[in-house]
Amino acid sequence: MTFDELDLDPDILEAIDYMGFRDTTPIQEKAIPVVLEGHDLIACAQTGTGKTAAYLLPVMNDISYSRPSHTHTLVLVPTRELALQIDQQIQGLAYTLNITSLAVYGGGEGSAWDQERAALTRGADIIVATPGRLISHLNLGYVNFSGIQVLVLDEADRMLDIGFHDDIMKIISFLPKKRQTLMFSATMPPKIRSLSKRIMKNPQEISLEMSKPAEGVLQAVYLLEDNQKLALLNSLLADKPEYHSILIFSSTKKKVSEIVRGLRSKEYTVEGISSDLEQKAREETLLRFRTRRTRVLVATDVLSRGIDIKDINLVVNFDAPSDAEDYVHRVGRTARADTTGVAITLVNRADMFKLQRIEKLIGYQVFRAPLPDFIAAPHNDTPGKHTSRPGSGRSRFRRKRK
Image 1 (cartoon, rainbow, N blue to C red):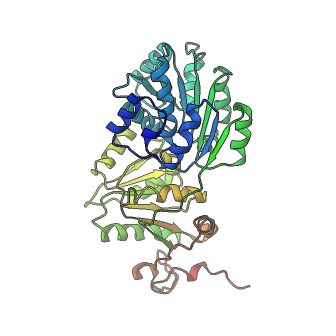
Image 2 (cartoon, rainbow, N blue to C red):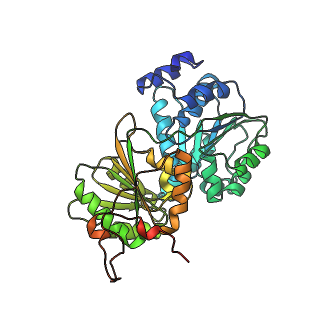
């Protein structure tokens, strides 16, 4: 389906065309008519499927018709990176529409607070906010959300995972009971169902089947011990100079720093990004990665869905993701738009069960890549060396016989 077939304002269609989009994605085709009709909606679709536009376009369509004098839509998101990403998308689409928006998030400069307060007081058309920062403004009493017509919970599952349930409920207490509520989530755990029953009215549901990694993604798993991972990574990066954009996911902030230190090179730049960085520093780090001044970016799980960067050559799961669906999200960051890419997952003995869940979800076994001889060489339990047959990383994962 093309966007021209949807009941959208001509100015919205012109903005879409200006952005270079013509055909809808499946989530856009299904969700936009539902939102235009005013229904509450629970939509389940993985990251990278165009779900942001699936709610922004009908919301902006309504704003262009009604021209409200107050804030029309509140979008709640789990991370500052996602708030900025959505705000930038709004600005791109609203270039000729005279629709205003503002991202409200913590960790910025002091002047950002005054800018946020002004927008929340005067009423930007769309506010995109992280829960904690928004509550800080709400507690001071000057925010008036009595005219909110649409509430969007984007990455709802991730917000609940982080622990924002109570914050979400507090924010909702400031909103009109009569409103349209849209919930977009990559997964549909029971807690999403529970929350929807409390805050939505007869919602329609759209659930797109989790797509498998794109055919252009070459996937591989290395079975190894934790103290072998950095040596393997350094070897892989040195052997592939043609990989100009490499994204590595780690499970903790502490490990991000360890990986960055372990990958330092005179040949290329390695940077880490986590919530420990000030917001300005995080934005500058992402900009350097986008413009390929930084070859390798190491990020935490929490930031994984907020990083939307195209043309990534290699994605590395330094730690196997606990959630099998997160594996699909991460792998999907390479080989976009019919390009090719590589996704590597490093799996230790304790994480074999995570690998099994991933393979059950995607429906096939991921290729087990042999370890290089300098890592897999036999030894006599000398510190810093590792037992296995040359070229094989499987033997150490075999369960010992009793």
